Length: 79
Image 1 (cartoon, helix red, strand yellow):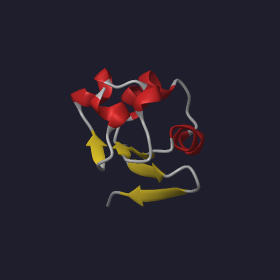
Image 2 (image 1 turned 60 degrees about the vertical axis):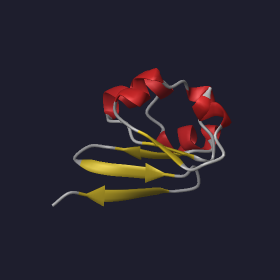
Image 3 (image 1 turned 60 degrees about the horizontal axis):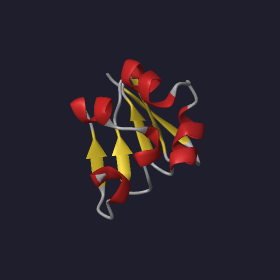
Image 4 (image 1 turned 120 degrees about the horizontal axis):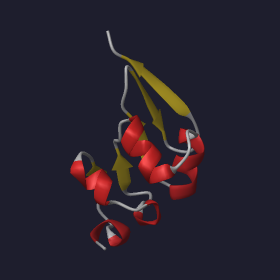
């Protein structure tokens, strides 16, 4: 309920991701899953489309982080 109705910028990470539902996400949400959490929440591997559909920002954590706002994808390579 809190996520779905928030008007404040909110970061969803760790155990909160496992409690979240895709339809709760909105433009005020930044969600930071690793790949397994991402698959459970979004059911596909298309980060840009998932961010666009939910109007949220997704930071997909991994050896190379992928960040999308639904318009583009940025990459953050760890050194």
